[in-house]
Every structure is written in C-alpha cells, then in structure tokens.
Image (cartoon, rainbow, N blue to C red; front, top):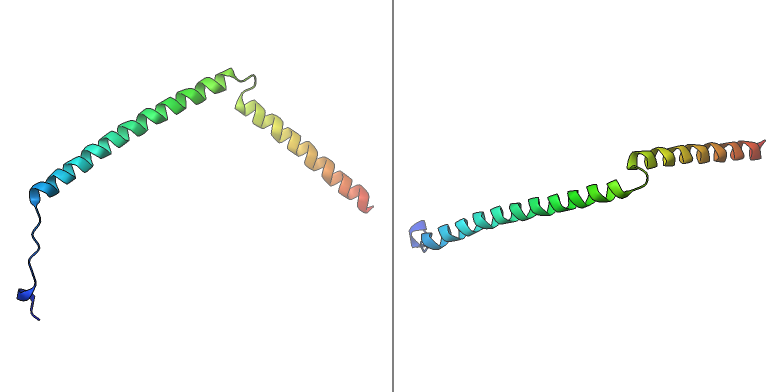
Length: 83
C-alpha cells in the first residue's frame, strides 16, 4: 500500500478557527473568574483575621511555647522514670 492510496484529511478551517477563538475567550473568562474569586477569598480572610482577639503570629508563638514546655516535661518525666 503506498501513501497515495490513503484518504486525505480535510479539516473545516472555519470550524477549527471558531473553536480556537471560543477556547481563548473561555480561557479569559476563566482567568477573570479565578481572579475575582481569589480577591473575594483574600478579603474574607483579611476581615476574619482582623476580628480575631489574638493575631495568628501571637497564636503561633504561644503554641510553640506550649510545645516546648510539653516536650521538656515529657523528656524530664522519661529521664526521671529511667533513674
């Protein structure tokens, strides 16, 4: 079978270009929707954080201190038990 006996591929160029244009428009709409959603979520998070009694960094420092105290107490208890 030689290559001349294969059927030719005919693409409807109008339909193909219309599809490509719709894909581009859809991509732009998707990006705009994502940007609006991200802005809304960021604003909600900012408002929520401003209503907290304690800032997230203060909470993290307090939790770190609690962890260190607990780890030290556990270590001391383990050492005392092995003596």
